[in-house]
Length: 524
Image 1 (tube, rainbow, N blue to C red):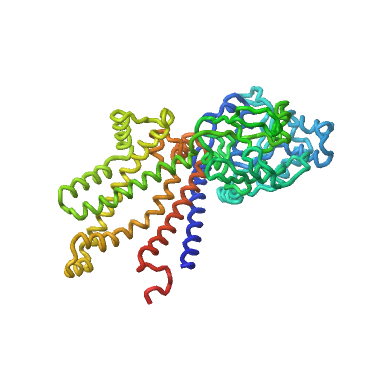
Image 2 (cartoon, rainbow, N blue to C red):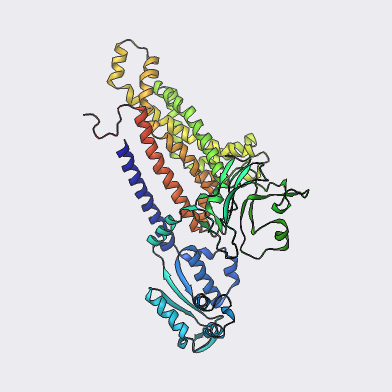
C-alpha cells in the first residue's frame, strides 16, 4: 500500500508540473501579450516613450520579461558608493541626464550598463527622446535605456513553485527604520482572547480568534497562489477566493491607538488583517495606529468564492446521490418497463442537450413559475439565490448516477452468483438489496472523492449563467480579462484537486471491495 501511494503521489506531482508548464507556455508565449492593456487606464493616458516604458515595466511585473532600467542601475551604483545622499552628487546627476542627450552612447556609465547586461544575455533597448521618420525629427518623449530578457516557462515555473508556500518571519519588512522586531503573545482587544502578534512580519496578527468559521485563523504560513494584476489589481489570489464577497459589514469597534478609551467607531476595517505601510503616514493614521501597521482589509458579509462554490456543489452532490442511486436501482429492477423507458428518456435528453440550454431552461422555469432570483446579486433573500444553481447542478448529476447505477445493476443481474442465489430460493428483493446493489455500487464509490473535492472548483458554466461569485466564475472572468495570475492559480487548484480525488478514489475502492489490493504480492 505504501509503495503504491508513493508511486501515485510521485506521478501526480509530475502530472501537475507538466500541466502547469503547458498552461504557462500557452498563456505567456502563444497569446498576444498586449491584451493585458485592454482595460488599463494608465496605459491609455500615456504616449510615446512613456507608454513603451510602461509596457515593458508591466511585462516585467506580469512575468513576461526580466528588465533593468539605466536609472535604477545608476541608483544602485551610486548608493553603494556614496550612501543615501547619492542623488545630490554631481556625477550621478550628470550620468542620469546623459541618457537624454544625443551623445548618450559615449557616457562611461552607459557603456558599463550595456556591457554588464549584454554579457548576461539581455537585449539593450534605447528609447530615444527624438524619433526620426522620413528624414524628419519628431519628439519621442523621455529617453530611456533598458535591458530586456525574455523569461522561459521553466524559469516561471521554478519561481512560482519556490514562492508557493510563504512563511512569515520578523525580517519580512524591509524598512531599515523598523528596529523593534518580535513575535509574541498579547491580549487581543478585538476578541478578548490572546493572539500571536508580530513586528517585522508581513501581517501584524500571526494567529488570532474571531467569530467567523473556522474561528481560528493564522497568517504565519500561507499558500501563495500568486497575484491578480488585471481583475483584482495587486491582490493575492488566495485572499481573493477565501475572503467574503458580500457587502461591507461595519461593526462598533476601536482603532488600535484608541483601545482602552471611550472612543468607538462604526467601521468595516478588519484590524486582524493589518499589514505594514511603507508610505508616509497620514495624520489620521498617526493618531489611530501605534505603529506602521495601518494597511487593512475589510469585513464583508456572506460567503467567500470558495465557500459559495463548495456549498452549491456539495448540496447538489448530496441530492444527486440521495436520488440518483435509488432511481438507478429502481429502473434496473423495472428493466424494459415504462419506468425504465421514462428514466432512459430523461438520461438521453440531458446527454443530448447542451448544458447551457437546460441551465437556461431551469432559469426560465424557476424565475417565471416560482419567482426565484435569476442573478445572484439581485436576490433580496440570499438563500434563495442558491436554489437555481444547485438544481441546475444536481439534476444532471442525478441522471448520470442513475445511468451508471442502472448499467452496473444490469451487468450484475447476469452474474453467476445471482443465479445461485435464485436457486437457493432467495427473493428478488433480497437478491437486489443484499447482492446486486452492493456489488454494483463499488465502481461508483471511486467517484465520491472527486464529486466532493470537485465542489471546491465550482461549476464554470452554471456560475457564469447565474453570476455566482464562486471559483468557477472566477476562471471565466480571468480569461476574459487576461488575468494570467488567476489562470495559473486556477490551473494549479483544479489539477491538484483532480489528482487527489483519484488517489482517494482508489483507496476508497480498496476499502469497500476486499478483492482489490495494492500490495505487489496480492493474489499469490
